[in-house]
Image (tube, rainbow, N blue to C red; front, side):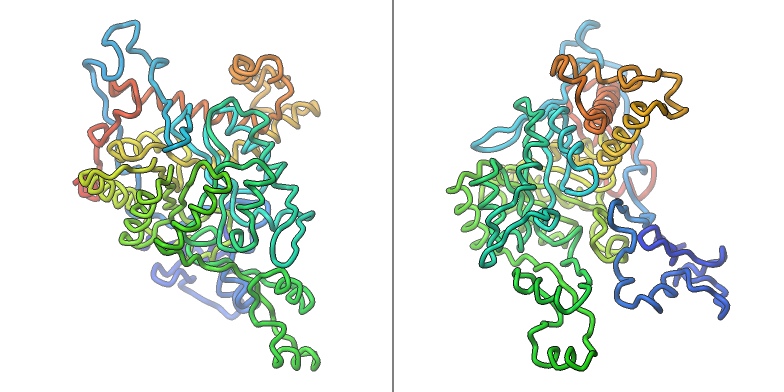
Length: 501
């Protein structure tokens, strides 16, 4: 059997012509000259290099299509019938609503979380409600790298950003609802650092926390984008971007004059952090007012994972997020999103083993977060339990964005008098249909009635995850999620048993 998808993909809207597929190649077993070219090979024959990347990016999200041989579905959740941990063992205290999901992390500047969840980095689609819902739910959220490219009013002088008004809107989308819990974190890649994004974010737009990224784009390598023409390539170079080929190369200028200009591509720089350069940069930004430091690490080689954790320990980093998912914003090569990196559960095993070793050495560890394909409370519970106390929170990105988009869409339809059929049984007003709006009133008062239904959607979705988590924790008689460990999991397969050690 093959764990990889065929040459059909939602990334590119490619489809195999036949239902008969060769498992090894992913091609139709019968390939005919009459084919209209709908599969990935047919697209590549016409689009060339462009077909390495998704063609369905834009206002969409993308998830890995590979069916891995091991994931959290290979575990069931345990349950217990006696006693209580984390509360009094009596009828009044040992109940679902007394399960504590709150926590705190950070070194010099402590950050509280109401839920063991964070919303990982993005800045596309309905980001306003995504960040607003995070503040309402009391969780930390991250703003994605390259946010500067989304701002039409961005101003650059001598390769440095002098005005970035969209950053103020991003900041305010969270802090408009901020109630002292969670934090907004700005993720920066190499180009962001070179162009002065961290400096202007700290000095002008009120940010206090930055996330350093290991890797680039959605995943491991720098994203490549085709530039429409020579003049645009020149503009990109003048703004400090890497462009291939260089439009100022005499050979390229000669080709342009002959009307034979090649395609131009711009691409992001790969990070080249070392222990020394990272320590220096963190020190510089702390002197400018950075209060909290975050790292973002994908499923690279285990030796690199360990090196990043050690760098975090040495620099007093507050939190590291480890991302094991393919997909993301859709700016990485299609095959990279399916075929590269340690999958989430294997990455978590590496992280937990390293943390256990460092803890025995007396090292003070930062908060650890796993992300990559989490969408429901059972998956979150399993990852927290598998973390054996070393995993402090779970990143929920695509699903939270789906909630932001859906909440807004449903709210708009209700206000237009077109309540979707499924929800009519609950009512025909926002107050009747959005059940957890009452919980928001309990926090914010009547002001909650004016909140965007997209942000309410994120809050409600995270509320659902929290409620489900409380059920699973109480099922194991553990009334604080900090007590979850591998004993709360039941391996169902040999693969899962092996991972349990």
